[in-house]
Image (tube, rainbow, N blue to C red):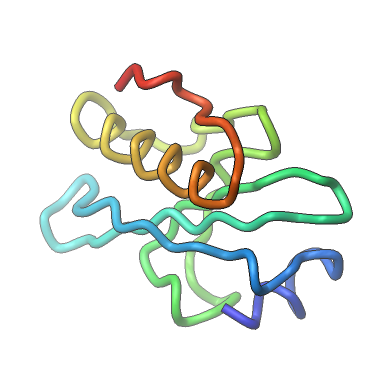
Length: 106
């Protein structure tokens, strides 16, 4: 995940990045991940939804939280897909020392 440090915000600490598997998206061939990173310059944890967390900046990345603000509006998931995404997001945030954004409601 070292590309985050060079291609995102220069204040990102690459040692504080986590990936949590979400599973399939709108079709069974897609495999999604939540990537969480602690941004020390902002003193916040941000999360992204992506299909290819190991590829780098050319892969599709959708920001789903900036600090305590959830931004899932760019994702057309509903029901169990959205619940899995929110749970993975909360897991990533908790592993990075933050408080879950969904309060356990999936």
